[in-house]
Image (cartoon, rainbow, N blue to C red; front, side):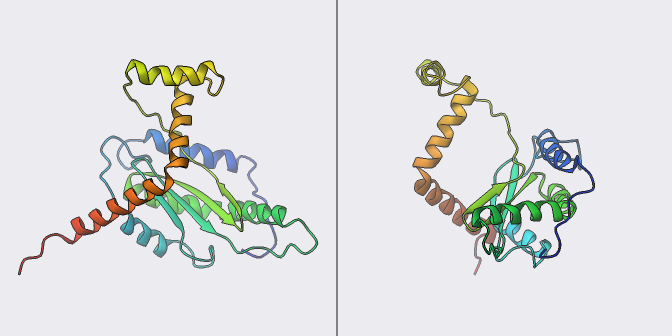
Length: 207
């Protein structure tokens, strides 16, 4: 990881990585990528353990950050900070992330393929270095919903005001806004759900 920087021999490698992540959202039948309509729920602890065993020990400085939903598993690891010397620290961190992305591409794709086969979800990768953070390939998954007139008017107001270009974009903006301002509540809710999963996995005690 700390050796000489190498560029990918294939100029289309970055596009291929993004295409494979997008293909996961659509699925490819049995054994293909993507969750599909019948992917079973997964326990986050099991996913975390699997990645801990599968990821090379020298990639990251500690355990990865995992985000798991019905469609995707996002894996973000922390890289060791480079010695910038007289250079700009932010540029050095960005370069370290870019180098990691190029040097580990094939290995990451192999791990992603295995995870998609095991969990029925696409895998997105990212890296953090100091205060610099980048997610390489995230899926954009359509979500169908039914809204009453008062709710549609909220979206239309955002569109008319130029905040969003469409109702779909306005809905995404609203979801991001809720996520930013209700982060502590959402974290508490996820923690409570994780506790329920642990209790369910243990099953009842029979004396």
